[in-house]
Image (tube, rainbow, N blue to C red; front, side, top):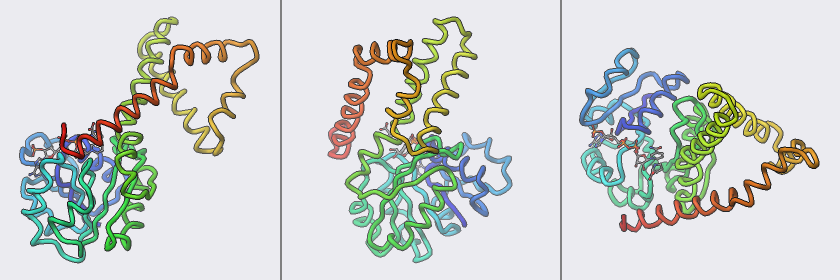
Length: 266
Ligand SMILES: NC(=O)C1=CN([C@@H]2O[C@H](COP(=O)(O)OP(=O)(O)OC[C@H]3O[C@@H](n4cnc5c(N)ncnc54)[C@H](OP(=O)(O)O)[C@@H]3O)[C@@H](O)[C@H]2O)C=CC1
Ligand SMILES: O=C(O)[C@@H]1CCC=N1
């Protein structure tokens, strides 16, 4: 596969690292206007760094767009005359609908809308995808690309905003939970490095238990909560303080904000 990442910023570079680590491409084009920041990637023999989006499009078949929402339209207008049937257009852009992409480049192209997260750089992204009518034939290809760097799920386009909150913003939400657990561990006497090690590996273990067993979280909680024990004491105090409620309210607030972004009311 010949892949171009148009917009090598936070997410674009995370995707690039994921592709490079999974050896998922013959070579990758990385584009941005200021390419000086990409000097680290020169060590990889199969990375071509350029500010020329048109060159990247001509030389690649998979085009992953990872620019800010306000930057996409001008880029698509600039490259649309180069688009051929070989191209699969994968957008990661928040709030940019397939209909809007089609209105710029036409509906005859394979268009995939995707929502990965930054854990793609370490092969652990939860990525949601959907496509236009023409792109249906390429959705399995897109899923295969993302499955090499984590796990993917096809969702209806109407759920992409919600998927953004849960999966993309979700990385930040889980980081804050791990950070809070770390702070608790420091208060209990561990040094900062040990505390983070304990918090992140316990978090990893909890998620792995659910992924590998398919169990419901409460089933696993029941195995840990000794009657009259310390776990239920801590859990109930967390719930009295609003743990589940605050998480749900935060997720809903994030979703309300993303809906306003889509309507252009930043
Ligand atoms: N960050 C995240 O976790 C996630 C982000 N997203 C979405 O991904 C997109 C990118 O987000 P993020 O990576 O955080 O944003 P960044 O601002 O970090 O990256 C955008 C990149 O696009 C480059 N760029 C701007 N204009 C052009 C152009 N004309 N040609 C080529 N490159 C260009 C910029 O570099 P330069 O200015 O040098 O050109 C910059 O490096 C957004 O739409 C966001 O909604 C989706 C899921 C998760
Ligand atoms: O915070 C944001 O708006 C973007 C979308 C998901 C991750 N970053």
